[in-house]
Length: 281
Image 1: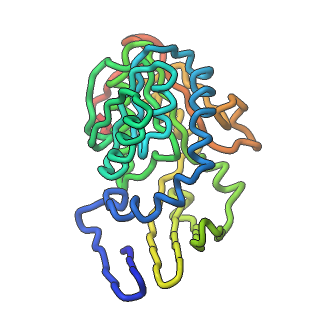
Image 2: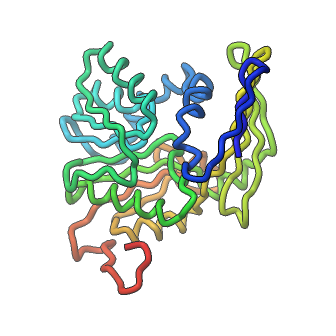
Image 3: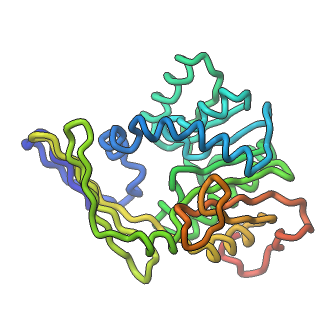
C-alpha cells in the first residue's frame, strides 16, 4: 500500500488489487524530477556510444528502446541515425519524449504499450532495456515473458542489451538508507532485503515544505548466473555479462549487471527447444 500526501492536506490511500506498482502514473510524475536530473540526461549519450561498441550495431538499423521512459536513450540513438521505436507504459513520459524529439526535429516512433505485450516479430537489429527497468513484475514468469518478447522482436542475429541491478552488486553495496537534497527537495530512500535476496525493497520519500510524496515497491534481483540461465531458456545465445557499459568484467568491482545476448538462428547453440510442461512457454 502506498500513500500520497499533497500540501499537507490531502491524504489518499491507493489500493493495489489490480494494478502493479509501476502502472501508477502518479508515481512516475511525482518522482520524475529526481530520477531524470541533468546528470542522468547527460549520461545517456555516453551510454549509447558504449552500447554500440558492445553490440556492434550500426545505423540506420532499427532499434527498440523498451521501457524508454522520457526517451533519453531513444533520442541519443536517433541522433546517430538509427531508426528508433520507444515503448513505455507511462503515457506522461511518452508525451515528454515526443516533445523532446520534436524540439530536436528527430523522427522517433513512441508507443504506449506494456513491455510484455509489444510484438513486432523479427523487426529490430537491437533491443535495449536500460535504467534498471527489469524485475518490476510481481510474478517472475512475467520477467521471462518480457525477455521472450525481446527475442521475438529481434531479427536473427539481432542483439539484446539489458542493464539491471545484479544480486551480487546489490549485496556488496547495500545500505539501509540514503538522503539527497535536489533543488530544495529532500529525497530519501530506505532499502530492505525481501525474501532470500529475491527482491530489493524500496521506500521513497520526497519532501519540500508541506508537500510530501511517498512510494514503496520492490524490484526482483537476479544473480549473473540466474540471468544467464533465464536468457538461455528464452532462446538467446552468445550471452556475455559485463559490470558496466564500458565492457568491464562482471566481478567484485561491477557497478551494474549488463547482459549482451544475441538472437541465434533455430538449432544453433543457445536455442532451447520447448519442453513439455515448461511453465515459461
